[in-house]
Structures are given as C-alpha cells and as structure tokens.
Image (cartoon, rainbow, N blue to C red; front, side):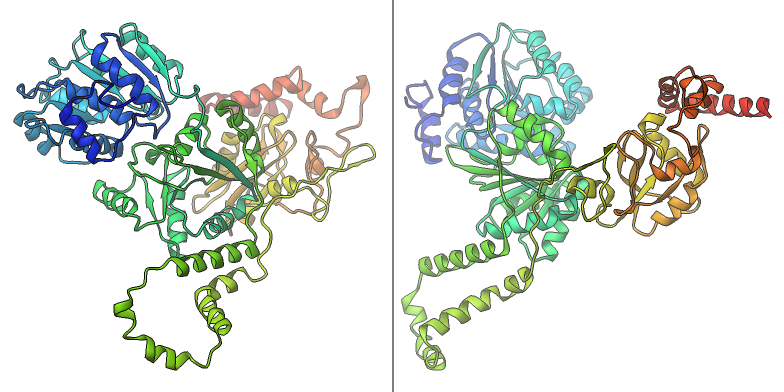
Length: 626
C-alpha cells in the first residue's frame, strides 16, 4: 500500500516524499481513506509515535478550500509543545499548497499577535483549549465554517482538566461537521464526549487497547528511596550514548534532579511549568538538536514532544495513573525503532508494577543496578568504539603527527592505550572506587514465640528499615498514635501546628500504622517537634514522641508499643472485670460503645468545626467528672 493508493493528492505526495515518507503506517492506512471518503466520525485508539499527525493532517489539508480565508479545520491539543509540533508538521506537508495558512494558538504567547493573524485569514487553527476559549469569548475567532474537528491526545486533555473546556468549544462548531478523536486510552469521560458530539463514530484500534508501544522493553530497579538519585546516575553512566527523558512527579523535584545532574557533569536540563515559554522553547531546541542528552521533565512534557530516536525513558518513581506511564513510555520505541522504559522505584511502589503489567499486557524485568565494574567496562568499550570509528582528516592531521610522535615515541602501544584510557576515565574510576551495591535484597521476616517479632536494626528487613529511616535531609519521628486511634495525616498536621512554636514545620513522608505513626520533618527540626508533641493530648490519649531509632522495639503492626504503654496504662492487655480491657472500659466511660466508634469519631474529627465540637464535648465531660 502506498500513500498514492490511499488517495493522497500529488502536491502533498511531493512534500511528504521530501520528508522521507515511504510507506504508510497502520494508523495512516486506516484513517486517511476514511477521512477522505466516508461521512462518519472516527475514534482512533493509538499510542504516541504511531504516525497520527500525518494520519489526520494529510486528509485535512486535502479538504481545505484555499480560496476561502476562514477557519475550516480545528485541531485541539492538550499542550503548547504538541500544538507547535502539529502546526509545524502541517506547514511541512503543505509546502506546495499556495495560499494555505496554519495558525498555532496557545497560551504563553502574545494573544494580540494571534488575533492579528486570525484577522488576516487562516484556514486551519491548531489550539490549546484555554487560549481558544479566550479567543472565542473575545469574539475574535469564528468557527461557523469549520467542517473538520480533530481532538488529539483526548485522554491527556482529560488528565489535565480540560473536559469542560472541550465541551464548551464543541458547542461553537457546526452540528454538521466531521470529527476525529485520537486517544491512547478510552476512559469513561472521553467516551461521554464521543457519545455527545460524534455521529456514529467508527473505532479504529491500532495495536491493543491500553497496551504500551510494541518495541519498548520495560525494566525496573528496586532501591532504597534515598538511593534513587545514585541509581539514576548509574543508569546514565551505563548507557554512555543515552538520549532520553527523565520523568519526575513535581516541578520542584524536576528542577532539583536537573540541577544535581548538571553539577555532577551530565549534559542535562529541565522542562516544567514554572519556566517561561521562551525558556521552554530554548530547552526543547537544545534537546531536539541533541545538544542535551537528558531532559528532566514533568508529565506536561509526556505529550507533544516532537523528538525522534529517544533511546530511554526513565521514570524517577512510578506515576499514580497507569495511563500516564503508558504515555511516558510511548515517547521511545517510535516509528518501528526500539526503546527502553526504565523505572527506578523503592519497595512501596512494587504493587504499582503489577498493576501496570496487567494493564499494558507486558512483563517488567527486574534488573540489578549496574555495578561500578560493569559501568567502567561499558564506558571503556564505548570509547574504544569511538576511537575506531572516528573520522580522520589525513591532510590536516599529518602536519602534526611528526612532533607528537617524537614526543611520545618512548611509550609502547600498550602504555599509550593505558594513558589515553586513564585520561578519559580517572574521574569515573575515582568516583566508583569502593561504591556499594544499591539494590534492595528481600529478607524473610522472622517470628518469635507469642507472635510477631520486631527485629533490631541489624536483623530487621529492609522494608522495616526504610519505614523507620527518614528521606535524605529529613529526621524520622515516632509518635504513639495510629489509625486504630482514628489518627490520620490531617490530625498529625493539626497536632504539630497546635504544639510546635516558632518557624513553620515542613512535614515530609508520613506512614500511618494501626498502633503508631512515623513521619519526616526537615533535618534539625526532629528533636524540637518530638519534644513539643510529647505529653500533648489526642482525644484523651497522652502523646509520646521521639526521634525514630532502628534499634528500639516499637509497636507491633497491631499494637501500641512500649512507649505507648508508658502513658496508656501499664496493663493495657490485661482483662479486668467483665472480660474487657481497661482501654475499652475507658472508652465506654467516655460514651463510646466500642473502639470502632471512637475510631470513627477520630475520622470525623478531620473536619474543622466537627473537631472543635468534639474537643468541646470532651472538655465538658472532664469538668463534669471533676
């Protein structure tokens, strides 16, 4: 099958041939004839990198009447980057169509210049939802002549909160128009848009629903949370020719990781929402031209990056949404090429790996973090390969050979090789000297007579150690209340705000267990927070808090621990009259029929006024008792 057989016009064929298009990709074979010859709408489920822009772009261009300078086609995309990419591609395809104008419309650029371009007459608008709605409300764009509407990356627009904007925009286009929706997945909200605005749509599935790109291998490294950055550097060092995107969860983390990589000598930069459009364009220009090897980005960059031949996508932790992982990994392994999706995770993320495997129908490979020996060997062979393949300009270099040869003639060939390699790799050799293994090794949990055993720091499983160890730059704090007490994250923040005076406390990771909780605060704040919380009150329970210690036998998973018993009553597990323990009797005296009722009270107390009301009721009860 050729593009000509699909019905593509001669002037478009000439342009795409110059761009290197040879045979149509599967999505193009299905969508192009439909848009050119059929009246029904189309829903196409396809991953990124499958040739979607040409699939809708070529037939859209072919259906434009260049004699009419009014918007006839509307293409909506979720991000500025994708908007610019589509606009650029359509301009390339239409190189030999005189009088055709394509206008990208997006936030972060001058709206006045976009308004002037619209007034000058354009036939195709490529727009992000927010800026397009702004222009519609200003009355500067008229969509009544639009005969084709394309929604590209519809599921990403859902993730970014654009569903209401899309619904609003589609009320301004004619009822009788052709509509095409591209999406990697089909969540219910997207299906509702299709049902409301599309006419008997035909669905084309390229590959399998929700599956990742076919040519992508999925591997992961399991390390302690504090070792993730070290593992990232080893992955980069083990792949000296890496050209990839590192995805982070937040803008702050993105900038921090990029800054660290730059300081450590890596060819990297960041891309996130806090950058101006000019900064983003500059970064993307460097990355497209391969002046950057590593782009550290938030998920806003998961779509719309017109970058070919990425070797790796690296997940610096797994996203909460499985569809987001699919979009990330789809940036590599495009157009028939192979790629690798690497995930660097800690033990609490292992469950997500299984969930993603089920959804994408692919198996993740658990790999050992590259060891220093393997990294150095890989780097040395890469240098040897570069030396072997380097282009030598004989005419120029021969002028310098005699002098250099005379200076180095006392060296044997082997000595010369050793010195060249040492010159290149001394820094790497010094850095990895005596470097430890980073992988988490699973350990079986032991038991002791009478129930669960809490091991000392030396014997404890790595999961337990991780839970009691703060993230880098943080102190880990223990507190003797947990979920069985109706104690949740909001209650912890409230306790800190009420009891810790002075500078605001920044709280990091929180682990809530049935009988106790552990949480992170900035390094140096731990002792101050623990001291301030000690002897405070949580609905009648006296608080004990201290810096977490690996060697202390804290509460079992379902209990309160030795520190909790110090204040709860030293016989909390002994039975009194009537076969009930003292804690239950105390709850009944306070008006709670069961421990579950008290727990529910604690959950409800997360709401501000309700919490005040309950504190007030408790104070009245104490006064009445006195």
